[in-house]
Figure 1: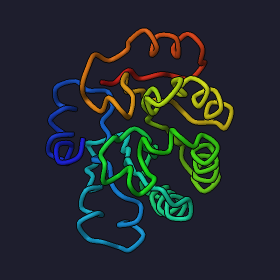
Figure 2: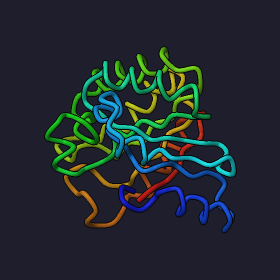
Figure 3: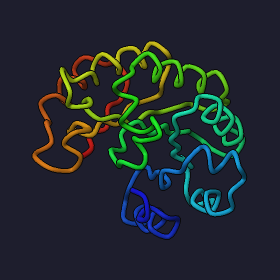
Amino acid sequence: MAGVTDLPFRLLARECGADITVTEFTAAAGLNRDDARSWRRLESDPRESPFIPQIFGGVEEEMVGTTRALSSVADIIDLNFGCPAPKVCRNSAGAALLGDPDRLVSMVRACIAASDVPVSVKVRLGTGSGPNTALNIAHRLEAEGILRIAVHGRTLRQRYSGDADWHQIREMVDALSIPVIANG
């Protein structure tokens, strides 16, 4: 949740009983350029354990470089393929990659190979242009070795409107052996 899940918010969530918190999603491109504002989004505190930075991007090399850099400080690295924001999707990142499952899986595979810590993924149910692809993608990502998957129960086209489809998330819970986090 960009602009919301900064360090004070995450620490408050922990104090209120949250088991895990995840940083604001941060562009791999900004982190690769050593953009100070991007790195500030990943500020952490020893009370925040496990520390889970969330990154997004549309360029595999940038995602891999950022994953490699973060794996020395993170406990888990979360890759966001669920953001429906037009400015993110225009750069072939976030939920736009759900329309290119092979590219998404390749990017996750490369990030896992570059990481010294487990990798988790966030997705949506699909693009909304045709059948939902999340279950197929989730099976492929599970085979690649992701730790867990968070699923937003709407499509890219829906963005944040309409009801989340909890039934499809339930199908994923039943079909996968990794933990599934329902979102949306």
